[in-house]
Image (tube, rainbow, N blue to C red; front, side, top):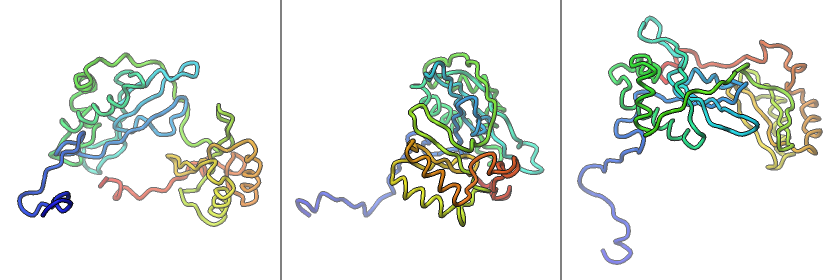
Length: 262
């Protein structure tokens, strides 16, 4: 082969080249790794039920940083006493620019010390419980190269989705829609399609942690048009139209037998 033919080389003999993922390494993680961010006073993500959680600390409209939580999870295996739900521990505070690196270090501690002998006991929460939150914090700090600051005061007052219209600081509007058990069907589907056609890319749709939908970046001029469509197709989007707390909090689940394998 000569010239351009040499530009593309194909391996025809020998072993497969080994590729190492920068964070996971060659062994990857013992189990899944879940991360959540909460902005007080809302805890719509159930922050303390995740492997790593970041609680935004905001003062006078400025983000100061995040309180860092580790070792949460709700899963367990029936008749296995080594498994159980656990709330995450808050281990300190980090600046906004350091949050990414803190999360990476939490992940690598889980990678290196997570239980690889028993899959049911391999989540980060068990590593934190077996070694202790203080030990886990020290491991994270060793990898960071600096100490986490003491956690700052915060208050989480509610969880769940906010329905109805809310005005943002930039003057645009968002509207939380209730999607019962996460299933968009019939008139709701038609309404959402018509809203998308009306917005023409100047707005957006965001799914929530509780299987509902938020219309976002709606201009003042578009709001009455969107409201008319919501009323016309009777899409639930306020306390008056969502009827009850039970209906507002319904979610669909694939059953414990499907959740456990994750």
